[in-house]
Image (tube, rainbow, N blue to C red; front, top):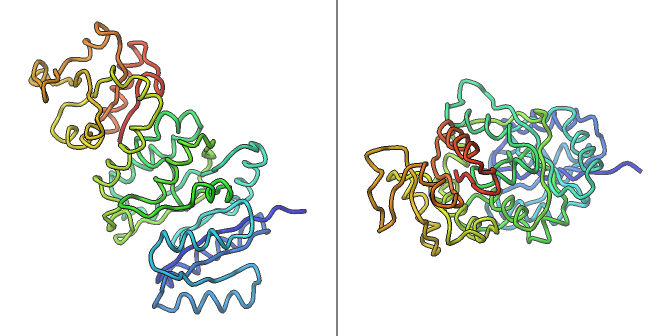
Length: 337
């Protein structure tokens, strides 16, 4: 018997992009799928168009979100998915023909896998800003379980519409959560903290659309503050940090860094020192805690390090310096986005 996949697609006023998105689903090499499309109170006729399509293709089901909002639509659709493997999709993105087949094979190859993601390509190119381009460069390099373990607190490691996950594992965690945070990153962090293996295929299998009204641009749940608060919540529970709670330092003593890490400090974590490369800062104190150079680490028992410097190039330079001191990424230090 072929293995069926549920494709979960919430949509709101997506009439302009939904046909191209659906066409990419119809072109899939793996033909055994159902589409669970959840209409989140559209007013542009997208739901009527999709219902008409569903009358011609029994694989398509269109549901109405009983409440409002993306999280409600996702959970309503998830409860209606008939199959264990659920592929997420957004109404303005495009799947490559191999996407479903490649991810299904990924689960067959690794039976304990909870989530499979893919690399993505941003489009249209003219709208891609430097920061978002750099984020996708980083994300596309974060593939293996070891990569994810080391970098889970840098940024969300997966493009949401590229993931396929085991329905039972996600529903056991009560699905997507409401809150002042990005619902997808929160789910990845809960899966990670529950010990569920996650991995990304090293293939680009989704075109991820950029637009001026993308949720991550406009929704306060996706603000820098929301991400910092969410990361701190899970970082404060991480066994790697808890084991060195009385013996850790924060790399980065600038004003922006101190503002970002206050969510962790407010949870009762107090670093032994702040590490910085600026000679003007070294020797100062921040709330009675000294600002030191990186040379201090080797002289003081090599404490656990949280790299709170957000710039990607600087973060990699710091990691290289720690590696040269004998630190091991993911065990002796963690980068925090």
